[in-house]
Structures are given as C-alpha cells and as structure tokens.
Image (tube, rainbow, N blue to C red; front, side):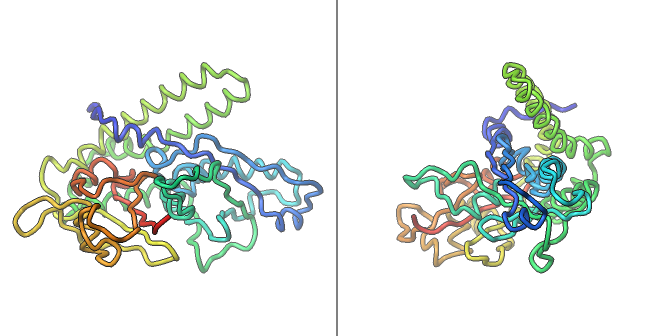
Length: 335
C-alpha cells in the first residue's frame, strides 16, 4: 500500500471533531407517549470534515452521510429504548437546526458552518455542543431527499469523487483507472471511522480512558493512511495544473449553491488566489482579491477557519478539500 503524505493540514482536518447534542422534538416526544423529559443523546467526537467530511445521514449521525448512517442506528435505538410508542425501524429519521432541515448528503462540518453562522473571528465562543433536533415524523419531502442505505451512500460518495475528477481533468479516467482495491480502500478509510466512534463509546462506558486515547489514535491513523494513500494521487493530479477547481460556495438565507467553472490560472498563466476566485464570482461581497482592500464584511469559512485570501486556490483545493474532493466554502457576513 502506498503511504499517505505526511501533511499536517490534511491530518488536522481528518482528526477534527464537533460535539453534538441530539434532542428529540418535544412535540413528537409527547405524541409518542413520553411521560417525562427525554434526555438528549450526546456525540462528543462527531467528525468535522476529514473522516468527518462525509455525510450527515450516516452519522450526524456523525461525519457526513458517512457519519450520519452509522449514528442513525445508535440515535434511533437510544430513543426507542426510552419506551416510546413506536418500534423505531419503521420511523423515518431526520434532523433540523432551529427549524431548518439538515441535508444528510452535506458534510457535517459544512452544515455547522452554514447553519450556525459562527465566525471564528468573533469574540463569542462557538455554539458547542451543537444542538440538533431529531424527528421521526412528518418527513419534509419537499426540502430533503430521503436518506439511502449504506451502499447507495457509497455510490453517492463515489459520484462526487468522479465529478471532482472530471472538473480537474475533463474526464473521470483517473478515478476509473483506480483498481477495485483502491476504490474499496478509499471508501473503507471513511466508513471504518465508525469503529473509532464505537470503540470510544465502549471505552467511555468502561471508563478505560487510556485505552480510549490509544484506540482513537491508532484507528484514526490507520483510516487516514487508508484513505489518503489513495486520495492523494487524485488531488495532486500527477503534478499537473488542473483544468478547473472542484469548488462550491454557500451563502446564507437559503441562497442557491454556487458552482461555476473556476480556472486555477489567469490568461497570463499566473496562479489565482482564493481572493481572486471570490472576487470573480462574488464581486459585490469581495470587491478586491486582497483582504486589506476589501470594505466588505464578508468572510470565507472553510472547516471552521477563515483562510487568507492570498492563499493559492490550487493549494487550497489540494489541502483543504473535504473527502469528496470539493472545496466547500461558506461565505458569512459581518459580525
């Protein structure tokens, strides 16, 4: 197996976590026969954007859907065990934050940045643990696509990887030329993070904190190596300048997601910066590609951090992308 690059940035993103507080909707709890207040379900190591960049459905369940699905079973069982009047398996689970349904196919770190509107340059602490409401009734089919089984989630993930590859190269040959073992390894590196979470849960129950720390570190390292030893070959693009940058921009107030062809260099062959790209796409919010020359209060947020506008867009794409290989940027307004 090829060794993953020793990149402290991608590793820090991989290890990033978000504590989450899952609470059953009070109205639904009463309708399901709750006689007392239903205690919330806490997840203290929800991956943010690395292994945590997968999808809300698996585990926001935890990571992204990758995380959403695995945690969905735990969350469902937790509330079923409260002796409510339903079995649980026949109930369609979904989530919201402040009344806004959460899209399971978005990375959990992206959902946090988008729905909390928290700017890391503010003087207030982040809203943690992040309060998420759990629902088993009245699925909002007009706002959400229904979560799929794990195999369908894997297909969705691979389709995003292929789309990113097409944007970089004009074809999906690099992904399609991966061996079956490499494709499996790419997915397993994400899916296997559930082992870390399950191990953490068991260790907490038994108060074996030393084992918890050791197990977490070992599994996270193994999964990082498993995923990035394959994915590195895709994002580095064999050292060639990509045709376009796989990039999506998210604005507040339910604005449509922006995805435009973004070339990494200008007409003279000079590499563009993050500021150049934001200025091209959103000139009203970023009147200048240079931070010091902007009168706007808008700021880009990636993985909970406000990056420097002078950052080369190719470097940002290779080092700050989510596991689907897209650079997901949330634009937040002034504090």
